Length: 81
Image (cartoon, rainbow, N blue to C red; front, side, top):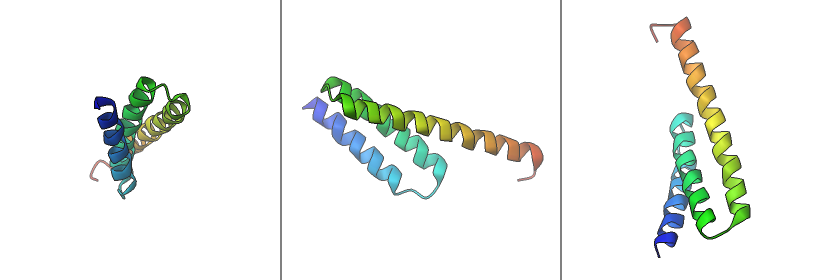
């Protein structure tokens, strides 16, 4: 039963992230959902689901890094924004 709750939690996180307009919270919540799916799929031995979510998590981390870097660069170039 606890395993199913983890899967439902991961599904809700991913669904909520896809309804967001702002990219930073979208990527952050999607990353948490992907990590939850990684744990869930490991527990139930669903290796294809695990691999897809490792890819999704890596993509989210990469894009979060780009967003943070862009924000820092913007603050350096335009400190009043």
